[in-house]
Amino acid sequence: MTTQIPVAEELFTWPSDSPQLIGTRFPESGVTTFPQSKSCPKSGSENGERVLLPRLGTLWSWTVQGFLPKSPPYAGKETAKTFKPYGVGYIQLGNEVIVESRLTTAEASELKIGMDMELVVIPYSTDDDGNELITYAFAPVKK
Image (cartoon, rainbow, N blue to C red; front, side):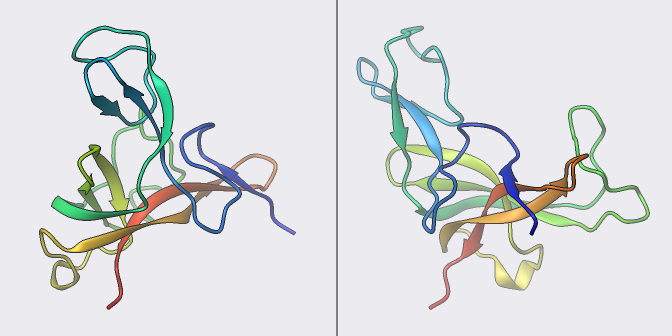
């Protein structure tokens, strides 16, 4: 049986049937960051609290990653030959924060600014031990 491992620790709750992104809220400034941060980008405060972000949000903006990103920092195992374009978007999570994320579709006909989106977990790659690395993405909410 393949073991699923998050691509990074403390990025999202796992294992979970309803995973959530993990951010930091800075009470003094009211700023919420994702991913987690040691200091507030607005005030410099280091008095942050770990928070679970909403699973549902709205698509704020999007595009399609149509070419293989440069490595580093991209760490995928695709080659120019095996790469498949994927959607990338900004998701507004309530009044908390806007996060950048992969989308589960790259089809323009399936994406509309302002549409409802839901956090999901998707396969990303495999590690040297054969474990499946997983990451977060947002999917259009099925109505």
